[in-house]
Image (cartoon, rainbow, N blue to C red; front, side):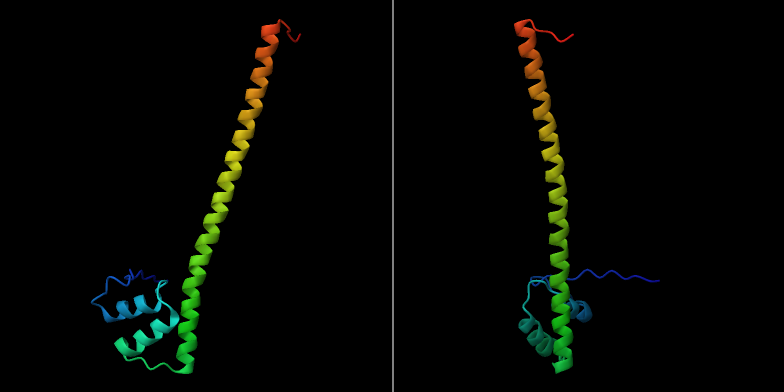
Length: 113
């Protein structure tokens, strides 16, 4: 299996490589679908047929899906971290309450035997 990594550009930076520039346009998460279609037609001479429009729409949905998945993963990670911190806070509160009770008993001279 062979893998290829391509560093796509953002809209402020354009690639000198025409293929990378086209892929950057196609997979841009910041560019609306209609703008992508217009740029593909005008900059890359790609005629937008119904079939190709459908493929571009799928690619637009793919980038949205990738962003949504990343947001979902981050929310889950954040929830786990918050739950862990909540458990730690509860444990600390319980320990403080226990120490206060021990301190109060020692001040009143009551000891547990």
